[in-house]
Image (cartoon, rainbow, N blue to C red; front, side, top):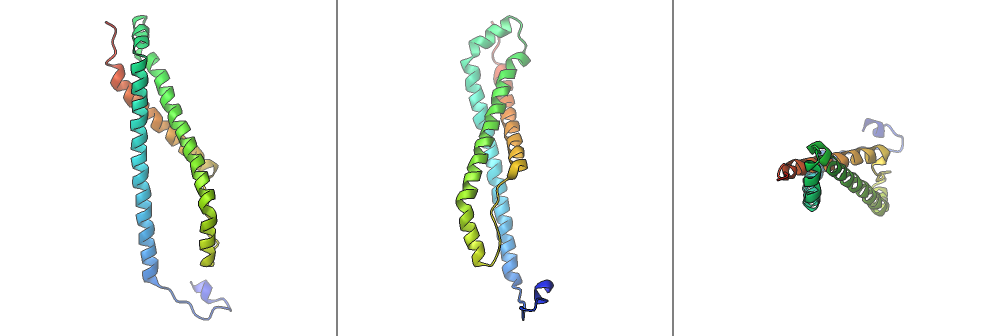
Length: 161
């Protein structure tokens, strides 16, 4: 603020602290909402991947019994389902990244117009490569965890007779 007041073309600087406090409160609420939605979506991913893996295990139940009869370990039987869960999470994260890029492109111009009305150079940017890689890593780990939970629950129930 002091630097703005030192400019030759600026006669007086007024700050509305109440407006700044309101804006900060709204921003904090927005951050908490984004976190809550992210957690809800993460739990949804765990449930969806878990259900998909459960259905895959049920569909391949006879094969699993045969593999166990010929000496296949639980780890051997578990591995393809874990790979499937990891890939589901990874591809889901890639699709989410593409959707995010589309939203940034779609909304970006409107944000620039709004920012220009306030003499601001604000620009909406996406995740970038590192953000996409982190998102893909989190997606893959979420898929792996969902698959692991489903496999551990349902593989124990399948035993050769």
